[in-house]
Every structure is written in structure tokens, then in C-alpha cells.
Length: 249
Ligand code: NAP
Image (cartoon, rainbow, N blue to C red):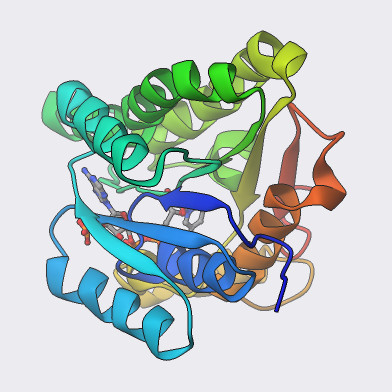
């Protein structure tokens, strides 16, 4: 059966769990072959691949630390050699190391910037030469409401996620002439291990700031990504879609 993303190859970073997992499952459901990237969670990534295969789809787990520039180049080169094209890149991998600015260590700052911002540069830089040759493709970068609004205790994360928006808009301008769309999705407060790690009081305060009065699910983000990856978004580039229950209104 022909589906929206049949014949497409998608690379989703950090897809062994959380939002990345939901995105990988959704893109596979729409017919894409999915490269399920992981860094630490190799077993979980394999489970995602098995789930996709059980549902009749095609996937492969690929290990790579997105903060490693050379390793990202190798991951993308291998993918293009094996599949001959990669059409969709979803930069989802991310971490938090929250602290108030006066207590934040240099390591906390650098590690978040290295993964959440430089990681997005690393994969886009390496894939862009192939996308330019094939004259088409979709890049979707996962930013955050923290990058749009700022957030106390997240100076490092907000800087990285705001940086992702600037990176998205600049690369969108660079690649638009070859039919390549580059957009960002900014999730609000989504129920994953990242938010489960927050103290209960902080979680309650975060939920009370959401006009819709509840947290989002990973699937809510996957729907927006699937839209941007599909044909219905072929004339949309350089945009940020906030999927946040109204947080960033
Ligand atoms: P999560 O459950 O903590 O998952 C994080 C994912 O990132 C994991 O799959 C992890 O892979 C991957 N990752 C971390 N460091 C990596 C590295 N160096 N190289 C490759 N992969 C790496 O977080 P999540 O909530 O699903 O978040 C996914 C994305 O959404 C992140 O960019 C996050 O900032 C963003 N976001 C989340 C929320 C939220 O409320 N949850 C809100 C706004 C934005 P391994 O386990 O294999 O290391």
C-alpha cells in the first residue's frame, strides 16, 4: 500500500525513547524507512526497530553521539551509501542540566550546548551536501518552549534551543532554492523521562502555566513532525511550530 512517506528514508536522532521514539514510530507508520539513532540506549533503540518491523515497516538502529562532529559525518555517509538517499532528518536528541546561572558549572553549560545545539549543526552540515545534490528533503529540528520564552534555571538549555531556532531559519534560507525545507517544532511540557526527572513542585508549576491545563504526549510532537515531513508542508520553511497547549501564546 502506497503511503505518504513510502520510499523515503528518515534519520531521527535520539529515537530510542521519549519524543524521538514516538517520531520514529510515526514516520515508519507513514511508510518511511527509519534510522533510529541512539547514544546510550542501544537496547531501547533495538526495541523501537523491532516494533517498527512487527508493524510491517523497515528500520535500523544506528549508534552515534550527535555532539561528535566526525561521528555524525560517518553516520550520514554510511546511511547514504547503504540507502542511496536520506530524505528526512529529525534532530531530536537533547539533554537538560538545569541550574540557576550563578550555580551553573561550565560543564553543565557546555554539555547542553554541545548536544542540543552543536549536535543539530553537526547532522545538518553533513547531510546538506547530499540534500543539495538530490534537490529536496526535509529537516525538522526539535527546539523548545524554553528557547522561545526563556526559563529560569535553564539558561544553558534556553540558549541552545533559541540557537536551534536561529540555526533553523538561517539554514532554511540557504537551502530553500533547492527545494529543501527546514523547520523547527517547539514542544512545551511533554510527558517523558526528561520531565519525569523534575521535582514534583516544579512539574506542578509548569502544568499550571499551560493554558490547556495538561502536559502533552510524545505523540503530539510526532504529529507535527509528520506534517512537516509530508507533502502538505512542501511550501513551508524557516518556521517554528509551538506544540505546547498554548504555553507560548
Ligand atoms: P528524553 O526522554 O530524555 O530523551 C532524550 C533523547 O535524546 C534520548 O533518546 C537520548 O538517547 C537522546 N540523546 C541524548 N544525548 C544524545 C547524544 N549525545 N547523541 C545522541 N542522542 C542523544 O527527552 P525527550 O523529552 O524525549 O526530549 C526529546 C527532545 O525534545 C529533546 O531535544 C528535548 O530538549 C526536546 N523537548 C522536550 C520537552 C519535554 O517536555 N519533554 C520539551 C521541549 C523540548 P540515548 O538514551 O540513546 O542517549
